Image 1 (cartoon, rainbow, N blue to C red):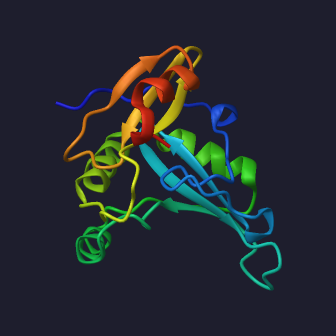
Image 2: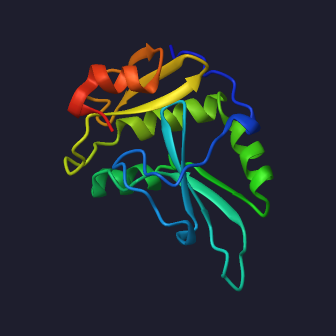
Image 3: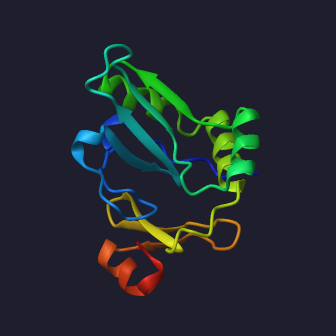
Length: 164
């Protein structure tokens, strides 16, 4: 039985230009940001200079997944996909979806896809609430989530080189 997901409000969703898996920072003009929600990494895109389809979209982060299993996962309908013309409304759409049975099934399928070994860090540290920092594994098949930690610094100090 799956644990219920914590409720997420749209105003709690914070977009970042830092790739949570690799730690690289994207240039602001790329129109690409990241958000980690309950262990799922979403890539939020907005193409400002597009002639058509000027909308906000969010999809699951797939750069670190192995190719063939990822294709099978996507064909089976396990992918996350959100689209809206306004950023605020996109975040509301994502917040409504978190915690639903469909979200949990897609999250489980996304976590089951094998990760590519190119990613050097074993954990990424994410914030889930006041005083709740968690170490989320890059390879959920091998490692378990660790936490909560009182601060980001405390989590990074305990995890050492294995965290980003």
